[in-house]
Image 1: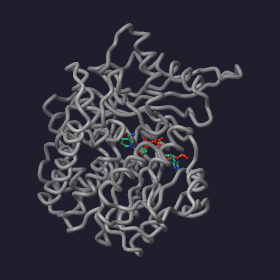
Image 2 (image 1 turned 45 degrees about the vertical axis):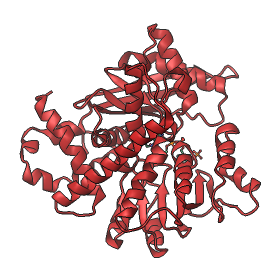
Image 3 (image 1 turned 180 degrees about the vertical axis):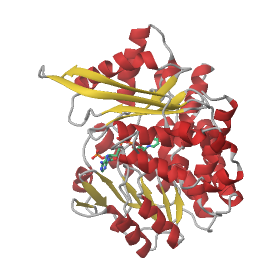
Image 4 (image 1 turned 90 degrees about the horizontal axis):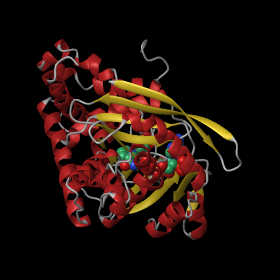
Length: 433
Ligand code: NDP
């Protein structure tokens, strides 16, 4: 705490992982002896830089850019970039710390990192976003590379931003180094299924988790918070498995659509018009927009928080439990506050932490890197099969690990210990570095 003052989300993320590690440290004291815990908390490298850019009216803006390279014991640093006005060092460090364990859980050779900026892309023209991305990459390029650090998207960074970032990287380095970024467009080195992967993967994980109780998405009522990349594809997958998604949101409020989401309409509003969820309610007679309530008050069987950190509180959890929720799976990173996680555990609600449930995105980024390395392009079906197999393996690894360490059914403990042991063993093997 003294070394990292004021980084509340980072402290929360570290506490959440370390709270699970008691049983594994008791069984294997070598992790303590080798200083693994201290080393895990200290990023290998933190880069903070100025991002100057000029808006369409000619005004100069200065934003702050970050890249926190947390741990590269398992492979090159890997993790997304977030562009949102709330971003500060504590956000990037919490996300980077989580990423280390998530990437370990995927079973792929990936280290963990995260980056971003306090730049707000909302309301900015394409030309302004391009100039910002070019300025951001003009510093970032010297720190990244296929074998060094491979960024991707996150909140506020989608296909458009990755395109501008990749274009500037290519221009500065004079190298068509496809493996330097993931989430690229399909015609220039991207992978099919990458866009859908986080949302699809979260639902596939939840489906397998529901099966442990003899339940499924078929006929289930579902609420999905957010309406961005992860949320839209979670909605699509859940409905394709027979669920009715009755609520979704953005930062201005939520929409209740009792007959299930019209995904085509939502995608047009969000991805083509870059509109708000209120526009969806305007276009659908049965749907209503709520600006002053909580999405988690809507009675559902399954809740999928897919927007941002700490968006599902203890009070929300109490309401979901009272309304009979069966399962909660985190599509976002750390969306559930610690008291809400405890409330779900106490009520016997199935709960999948983000580092397991939303790992499909980064796992498919690793598949994109495989295709780039072999100059290959896989079909949608083949790539989705690979994603499904990876999600099933992560699910089972969490359950088996929870069982092994005396907490059957605790996906939180299973994910944290399974993620930890793989990276900790690699750190010990590589020596004190
Ligand atoms: P997007 O930018 O595409 O969408 C984010 C959504 O969340 C938007 O609907 C946004 O609403 C909402 N949101 C963001 N911040 C807030 C806030 N402070 N309060 C309320 N709502 C908010 O991002 P993604 O879908 O890519 O990411 C969503 C979550 O999933 C994040 O936690 C991210 O870290 C995580 N994740 C993403 C992965 C990916 O592959 N993209 C991989 C793994 C995890 P508004 O438009 O109003 O801001």
